[in-house]
Length: 149
Image (cartoon, rainbow, N blue to C red):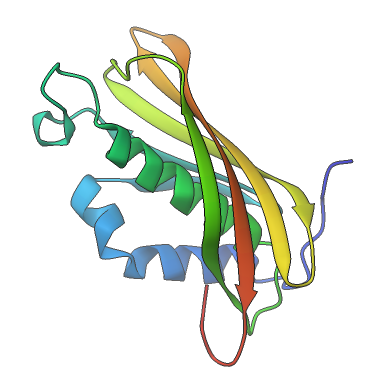
């Protein structure tokens, strides 16, 4: 069942403000392309400083972007006074991450009051084609008491 409503009507602004505070996303050149209730798309361009020794985007970079996409998808369904923390994630690297651009698309599988489960897929885009290169399943914890997500 698709999740279509968020308890915070200003979730987009809250998520984008939080995203802007994540310096790692700026360092990697990641942009928040889309935020909907229970969904988040993050994207970045291929850069030489993000590659491993064989010329593919480093798995750690992909995992970082997938993790953030999962967190923000979950955050979009939480109350305004809450934030998120990843408490576990599992990543499957399916194919070498070769392309000119990469996008991580996250969608909440189950939004709970304190724990949410999110799935994200990373795609390499090149010459108009898209290839699935990684999948993440993440468990995200709701954080309250002034922590903003």
